[in-house]
Structure formats: structure tokens, C-alpha cells
Amino acid sequence: MSPTKKAGILGATGTVGQRFILLLANHPQFVIHALGASSRSAGKTYKEAAKWKQSSPIPEHVRGIVVRPCVAEEFKDCDVVFSGLDADVAGDIEMAFLKSDLVVFSNAKNYRRDPTVPLIVPTVNTDHFTIIPHQRSLHSLRKGFLVTNANCSTTGLVVPLKALQDAFGPFTTIVVHTMQAISGAGYPGVPSLDIMDNVVPFISGEEEKMEWETLKILGSLDQTSTSFAPLTQTRVSATCNRVPVIDGHTESVSLSFARRPPPSPADVTRVLAEYTCEAQELRCHSAPRRAIIVTEDDDRPQPRLDRDSEGGQTVTVGRVRTCNVFDIKFTLLVHNTVLGAAGSSVLNAEVAVAKELI
Ligand SMILES: NC(=O)C1=CN([C@@H]2O[C@H](COP(=O)(O)OP(=O)(O)OC[C@H]3O[C@@H](n4cnc5c(N)ncnc54)[C@H](OP(=O)(O)O)[C@@H]3O)[C@@H](O)[C@H]2O)C=CC1
Ligand SMILES: N[C@@H](CC(=O)OP(=O)(O)O)C(=O)O
Image 1 (cartoon, rainbow, N blue to C red):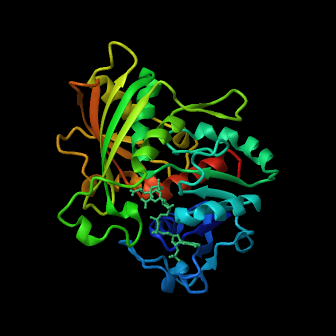
Image 2 (cartoon, protein in one colour):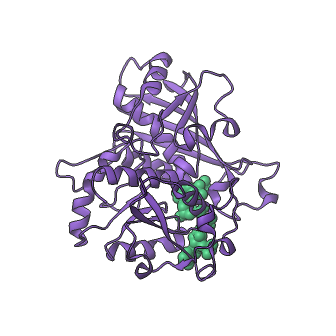
């Protein structure tokens, strides 16, 4: 079956944009139709414009595509537009696309807090798509809508949290420390003299995003599907560090449940390993076979060894154990540019197709 939906990619030359190219190059539903980037790139072929940093080559049929400026008129025949735009420009451009009745899946932070825009991690809260009719009516749209996906570190965190919340009820406290890959900072990103032989204990704005995004994603929609109800009883504290790893964010998580007695490490391990999500039930092409992989090895997960499991669409969890301060602690790994970015958008779009929103 040949792909039927025309896809545009904004920010196609960037780190996330390059992941979109790889994920969509041989996609059964979406065909790469239009590529957009800044005025520095527009008018050049993709091969000329992109500083390609992926370990597989630029797909042959993409090399010669001429990059367009990111204006809605240039993308009007796209069925879906994926955005890997720099946050400095994503706000205005994505809103212009939405107002032109286009379907936009954004990686940027700009609209994540918007009360009518869902913040969807595709293996966690695809039920939040139910706000789309309300969003369309507010903007008088026929077919367009805007969906954001989460910060890459938040994405890794909420997958196991969702499994545990469904099984054991609410958390009182979540404390997370991240070790984030340099690809998270885009290209050229962190200077080599800052990150080689080093750890940088600050990523601007990252801790705040992890703390509030988690509450929106794990929260619910009201009964009329017109507003979000973020969690209010859970406190989240995040500490974010940049480490000299190319891809894959590692996170150490400690948490307490409201319920007493809390679940044991064995209960937690079982629930994580058995977790399934709607994207799998809908048989979406990019859905991981296992949304969470639990590793029993004492020294896993590790970014180099585990980031590509399930095509980068899973979260690997290990070292599940009792915590002397909170109830449970564990370590997780997420591929920051696949499930943490472009992979989330693509799987979200597949879910939207299955729900007949596109
Ligand atoms: N990297 C990651 O792990 C994650 C990134 N994100 C978010 O995804 C987005 C993209 O990040 P990333 O790929 O890392 O960033 P990059 O800096 O690597 O790429 C940015 C892209 O935006 C384009 N761009 C910049 N200015 C303009 C403009 N004025 N008009 C049109 N296009 C423009 C660039 O085009 P050109 O090449 O022509 O300059 C490039 O294609 C950001 O919002 C980021 O916060 C989210 C989760 C994870
Ligand atoms: N800040 C993240 C990547 C990112 O761009 O996040 P956000 O989309 O939330 O701005 C990192 O450095 O690893």
C-alpha cells in the first residue's frame, strides 16, 4: 500500500527535523511532501541545506527536495505538518499554520501550556485528543488542529509514572535527576570545551518544564472535554544535568505513593513490564511492542546499549528498588530525539489517523 497522507516538516534541517526525515522516509501512511527551514536554507536542496548528523545517510528521494520558507501557503496541500522549529520562531509560525486550517504536531515548548492544546506523549495520554473538537471550534477550523509533544526528559519520566499511577493510584512526591544527552541542545548545541570531560549541572528552563508538564500529562480532561485538570496533589522536583552522551537521556527517579502500604519493588516491576497503551491497541505503525522494557541487569539501562530498543520508541527502566527516603526508586532511559521528540509526533499523528482526526 502506498502512503496516502502528504507530510510537511518544519525545521527539517535541525536535529529533530533530521529524525523526522528518517522516521517518515519509508512510512506506510505519510509521504514526505514539503520541507521548511529558515531563510538561510530556503531555496537550497535539502542535501545542500542540512548539516546531516545521523548515522544513516539522507534518504535518496529527500536529497534533492528544495527547502521552502516556513509560510503556511507553501504547505497548504499537506495533510499533516510536523514541526521541529526552534522555539524562538515556533510560536508565530505554528499559530499561522493552525489559522490556515493545517494539522500541526509540534515539538516546541511554545503551546504546551495553552489550555486548549493537548500535550500528548503517545504511549501515555492519547485520550487528551478528545479536546480537539473544542480547539477547532474556538479557532473556527474545519480540519486543522495543534498538538504538542512534551519535553524529552518529561517524556521519559511520564511513561513509567502512567503505568504506576494506573495501577497504584496517585503519587505524593516525585523527585527526578536527569543526565541529558548533548543532542537535546540541537546543533551545534553545547560547545565541546564545555561538555568534554565534564558534566554541566544546568539546562535553562528544563527543571520547570519537567515539573509542570508531568502534572498536565498525568492529569485528566473535564467531562465536557473542554479543559484540562492537571494533578494537584503531587509534588515534582527535577534536577537536570548535561552529560557527554550523544543521544539518550538517563533519569534517576524516586517517588512516594499516596496509598499505604506502598507497592513493593516486585509489584512495581510487574506493572511496568505489563504496561500497554492505546497506540498499541490501535496497532499504530510506530507503536513499540513494549512501551516499557524492564531490565533486570544491575548496570542497565545505559544510553549506548539501550537507546535504540524498539526503534527508540520505548522507555527502558532498571534498578527498581526500595528507597530509604521515598517508597521506590529506579533508573530510566529515553531516546531524546525519537520518543523524546520526532518519534512522539509521528506516533501521535498515527493515533490521530486511527481516531479519524486526520
Ligand atoms: N533535540 C531534542 O532532543 C529535542 C528538541 N525539542 C524541540 O524541538 C525543536 C527543534 O529542536 P532541535 O532540532 O534540537 O533544534 P535545531 O537548532 O537543531 O534546529 C532548529 C530548526 O529550526 C529552523 N529555524 C531556525 N530559525 C528559523 C526561522 N527563523 N524560520 C524558520 N525555521 C527556522 C532551523 O533551520 P536552519 O537550518 O535553516 O537554521 C532548523 O531547521 C525546538 O523547539 C526544541 O526545543 C524537543 C524535544 C527534544
Ligand atoms: N531542553 C532539552 C531539549 C528541548 O529542546 O526541550 P524543549 O522542547 O522542552 O525546549 C534538552 O536540552 O535536552
